Amino acid sequence: MSAPLLLTFNPGSSTVKIGLFSVAGDRATRIGQGSIDFRHAPLSLHLVEGDTIRDIALKAVVSENLHDVLDETLNWFATHFSLTDLVSVGHRVVHGGDRFAGPVAVTDETLVGILELVPLAPLHQSQSVRLIRAIRHLRPDLAQSASFDTAFHRTQTDLVRRFALPRRFFDSGVKRYGFHGLSYRFIAGTLMRRFPLLAAGNVIAAHLGSGASLCALNAGASRDTSMGFSTLDGIPMATRCGALDAGVVLYLLEQQGLSAGEIEKVLYEQSGLLGVSGISADSRELAASTRPEAQEALELFAFRIAGEAARLATTLGGLDCLVFTAGIGEHQPGVRAAVCERLAWIGVELDSEANAANAGVISSASSRVTVLVVATDEEQVIADETISILHSEGATA
Image (cartoon, rainbow, N blue to C red; front, top):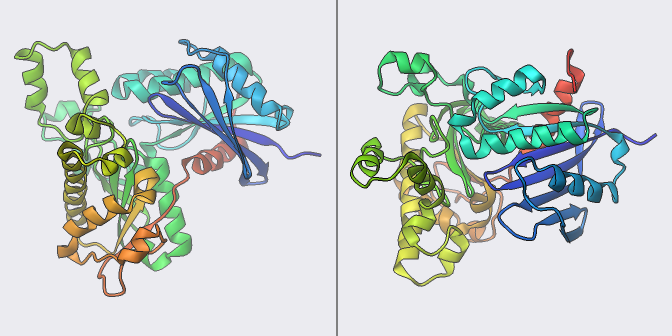
């Protein structure tokens, strides 16, 4: 008898990563993965099965409901795997608000709750809703679950989560939520297994990808993070601005005459590395460029990361370990070096050869702070949480 399978969907604002896992008891083992970038036409499915990598052209086009895209994608997976053994689908959902403190089964009621949070993360949350509805349409027999990026940060105190606004706003949900929680949960678990003494202390994890944030961890729990009410806050990102004086938004609205929609587009899609450089949102392209605007964008990126790390170290009351993760954090030594150079005053010292090789430990023997490079795996967390929902009472399709 073949093992049960589960799928995971990890959507970005314009992409989706897909994981296929074999289930044995409480353990999920990845057996395949794919990704689709909705910005490219025609669409293609980047499919990985072991050492085999394929890019498959898709005939479907992006529509509001994604039915055709997912139908064709599932059919391609079915040519390599027995999807008749598929028992559940797990989704990364960016925003859980104060309602969702952990993974949940997707029911009519929980889907309404997820929908109500779309205004707090319009680009990401709506993608999750489209995927959930598409699976319901194509495979109504399948149980679905939702894993929330915000849930990991529920261990933060109200003091950390509060803005200096009238209290009624906090009470109505205007507060710091934090994101990339699935990534930080994976990093915390990995540190507990591989570096238990470090994990028990003060750790700052830097999730540096197209979206980017930092998280302060103590004993594996989130104590503070750079992202706040929305995924715009904190450090600059590929196309997002990071922390911004609210007066700038008022100025763009009242003096520049931009509409709320136009401002949203500027802040989410035209800022960050792309906006500062005027060249690209890809830090690899900027690193290869000789133009001063490209170098300034990378310098600003590193400057803000180091500044935020220093703030988070204040929250923790010290720093024992700095972890780099996600695409940029795991693969770009130049960014890591620029950040660590600005943190030398708190005892961060790199081993240049280890850093250049993307080694697991990249700090020097004399560094007072251990610096690690740890690959994250959000899909594994989604899969593990999906299994927990399957095994809990009341998990429904």
